[in-house]
Length: 377
Ligand SMILES: *Cc1c(COP(=O)(O)O)cnc(C)c1O
Image (tube, rainbow, N blue to C red; front, side, top):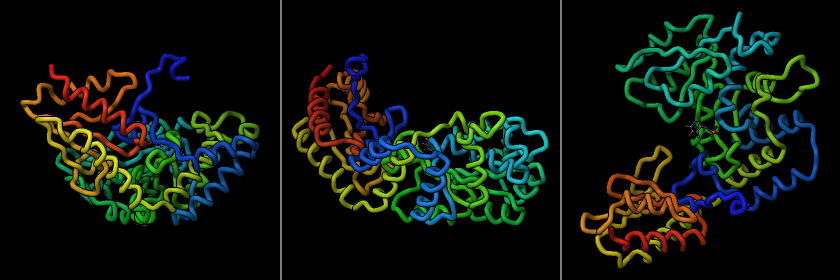
């Protein structure tokens, strides 16, 4: 099909990125989606029961599948704004008469905050570049505040109040905390740790645990999850107007895929998963072993896109000054091939990530890398 459309296939040695299609679905996830395709269901019932099942699996009070964290953020913000005014559900994104300010610490501002604002909520930055204090957060809370927003990976960012303290302040004022924990899923007890960390609604992206690119989970307090459900895309027939969530529609196949991927992720032998990456790294090291003027270092490419020594999931290839080519040129030429081989460029090095690479990919990556590293000018 891709060939017929003239779409260049990509060998993905970069990792899990939405622009490249997210993750690679396992046979088990794919089978669950195929099974769901054979039978129709009542979508509200599927969402409610799959949500309960997911909640039991990760240890949350309640949960619901959304089409990704981004959509989940819109619905979570909507749920926080309308939680005491269910009669005003259908007026969003018009927020008249609703608490609609969502607080964020200045140094927590990040690109996904736009999703929260899409609900109609207004973001209020507390503090400035020099930092935010607990007192400033507390002083900013009044009856117009619907929630406090917190990106989990920016906890401990310089000049920010830690999550535990923010959660304590929020609890005292009965203001919910929305926690973006999109990739906090490994090791698997991380789900439970995140849920206990102080968010009232905590979001996980399915793309990071082997689920569909357009899948996500909102988990947390029962009343707020019910609020998210009240804004979801279903119940069109019983409403005057379509819900806010109609633009974030889900297929039953996708819900099945998220459930199956989460089950598989929780049962998986993750040590074996990393051994698989390391085996691929060793294969590539053998293929490139005799290429002069390069330096090969097996490393760990983290979710924060930093490099650490362990556990191995990538190969760092430094291209020396005498190599006759540069890392930049190699990355560019790999990218322009058919199939394209996409990697990371890091200064004078390439990073080849094995997270979504299969056996066939490894031989092709090795062959193409050898060609380009030996190609010279
Ligand atoms: C990927 C990501 C998101 C968006 O998640 P989607 O499920 O792709 O909508 C939000 N926050 C962080 C930190 C992410 O990495």
